[in-house]
Image (cartoon, rainbow over all chains, first blue to last red; front, side):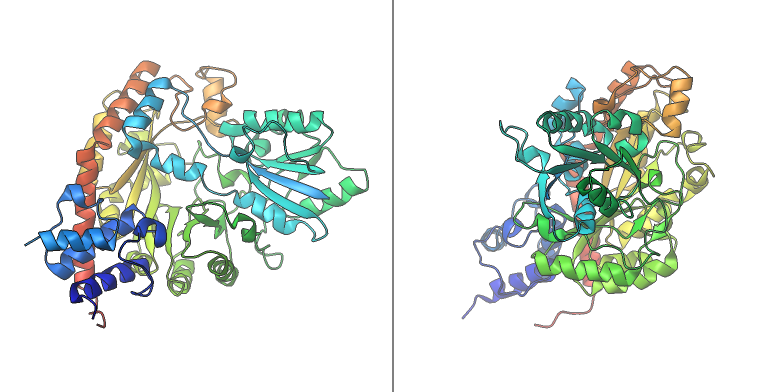
Length: 78
Length: 442
């Protein structure tokens, strides 16, 4: 059964990239696989902050290029 | 015939100090890099105008810059802006020296036809529509003329516009695909060397024709980012209200250039966001009203200065980032213009800013005026028409002051701190917008 957190994160990314939530892997570099540019990455970050109630440090806003990086960040964030 | 269409790309800043800054502050050259890596829509239209019996190859000049043996063609077509024209001439001369027929077109050729003529068997001034098929027929019959003057109006009224040959771009690493929705501009700025030189009119492509191009592009490319290759997309409210819902259906992300009136209609900013608009580039030109005075024939930009802040806020609050384009070196600019621009950018909360130096492109009213006033630094400076290099004596400061002021402004506006602030502001705006959006299905 899929990790519920991963499923929620997939929906966030899919909504920004305008693709289906199952169309990318956790290790995919979303900039390459989905063509997300810098503004798209910020939209994903905004979605993550809203969905999970976190505030990503400003210096990391551009530093979460994969689902795995985002999930790891969420794990380490209380 | 075997026809090679060669796009000239890769503008490089010439002033050494600025080139170094570009390395340490990559933000300031981002837009320049994007422009330099866009495909040549003009050549894709030329390809579309070419009868099927001819074979077409589309090449970026970067692909053949280093090769010893140029690819062979019966006919080479070159299109170039001013900054790359010398490289285009060199390439044209190489091809002609081995007996290949060369045709040159594009903005610089239209502005300086006599110069281009020296490097080509034929030149095309203005749009290729109407004349390119005729040129090919003439060439095959051995009576090609030296100069063809293409269409300069009525691009969208003589039947369906030609579908650009987007498939020629397949397999190449373009970040953006360009589509044109209009030609010309209702404004008439004295420095403009863009599509205004191709047509004195402002003409908008019918929405149905753009829809077909969008369908074609989305068939060919996976999740393309679209750059509308217009000078001023959202001039007409009625057209915008017709176009944006169509665009929304494609679920694309896109960018364009337009003027500040795009924020006049209270519904348009949200329609832009909903349709996938990431950014609009707006030629604000200056925060100083006296510097705006006189740059546009009807003084439209000076009259609009009072609305800059509220219009930018309306767009950005709707999630559409504004890339505010500023020009330094205008006649009313004094050495304190640089701090004035920095303060304006901060006050406006501009998500992105592009600082360019006033550039007298040959053939423009600005060029003629500065030449008459003996303010041009060199007689011929085409490779320095990069928008960053200074080519004239400013009226109220020295050349050194202008160059130093630009460098200072770049370091002020493109620091990591400033970039970080902008990113955080954008995240907060999107959170607010998405928070008020209808809940997603789970």
